[in-house]
Image (cartoon, rainbow over all chains, first blue to last red; front, side):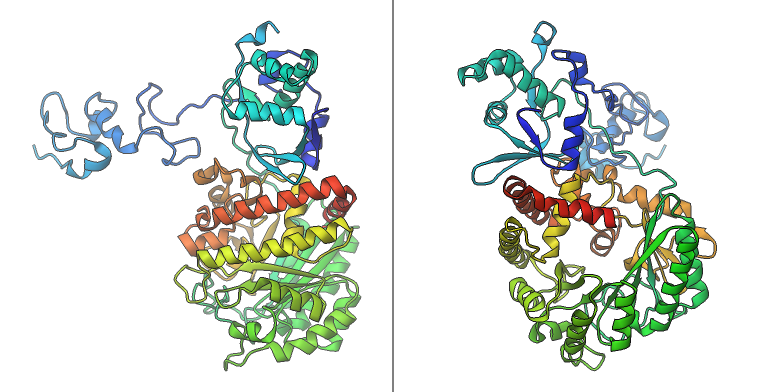
Length: 113
Length: 482
């Protein structure tokens, strides 16, 4: 290395690693020791609308949308119709008082047929 | 550059730091430290303004007088080490430790009894996790023997293993300590391996005979001590409230005078009333003659009277920096200063650690209580909630796995964007449990503090590596000994 001077043992290991062939774009992006893995949300859905997800760390803090939002996916688009009232036939107004799921989810009530 | 024309470079994940005339970076995903030359610094400054293609970078560097071929070489070098990156780079989680991670250190709590009543004690104080009711107060020789056998059996491939004696007050069970040292040495020698020992004590029970034994057997000694009498006696008291300074002072002096085979260390607990770091250090290092002095803020829930609040911690940081500057002056002269908090951090920086867990608890280290219960470390000994098996039946692998999964950096979301995570990994499991009720919670109450302190130590590291790199060899040897 010419422009970076390794100062600790880890840096020396990086410096001693065989440098990729010059201008080899593939090698630059994908060093053989750490093939990047795709980030696939763990959950029921691989579509763009998040399903019942956890983030890459196994928690919910890092989701791109709040977990409460999933309620609508169950209710409107029926990922999991058994879990929430049926929007099409029996309970079209179930979510009327819940404009923003993250704030108003307490207004979602049980349904008594 | 044909195929690369579609590349757009941006900065990788690193923390920049500089000393008077040099620029460095701490490469976070690796824990690597590099010094930068002017061209590399210029390229990084450019990317700090926004992304750029290799052509734009080359043009910028050409304007600074760098020929195109050298510019491309520079870009390749920075990309190779991931100081700059292009394209999608998903976060690669750190690997789990292998399931058969060998033990290296066993902490034997020889007794849970103590002749002092320090209010802040994590074993007896208000925030204790131990539940010693109905359990043996003193470890017996059978349990201790089984523990030594356990350590040797669970450390395949390690040439040297280590036992730390702990308490309670360790020396209240000195007869057992002696037997363990003799038995451990015999067993280890029988396998062609070596074993060494250390202990932590409040020094009240040290006698010339004990000191001789410790010295002869090269047993490392850490004395829990909080400074000169007016500070030490605030919380380190006997059951009747009398301070312990006058009792331990002559014993500590005798220990340091007569125990010449290992460095003698003082370990200071900082509290709201005892935070005069510089004065404490001067007393312990210069007046009493300890070789090393280390400081740690008390582990406590935040509402205790002796807890240090945020402004108190800022003050502690300021005083740490005074000693750190001094450390640097010593290091540049090739001398050891004795402020452990700097040496410990420099040692980890030298290796370039990148931790999956904040410490070795339940990995290379476990604690064993007087009853034979195994705990992740000495701080959890005698706690039913955290017990991880028994010395007679071995480690409870499910509980161990659960503990390690919780404490893994991958499960601490708050840490994922922090540049200090290779060293901190979320901080002490026990502190997290006391503060947040979960050993796997990141210790968010001291993040800023840790980052400031790590930055201070990085600057020291950088300066030493430029002006007296030989000094850093100390840490290579230090690691080799452990």
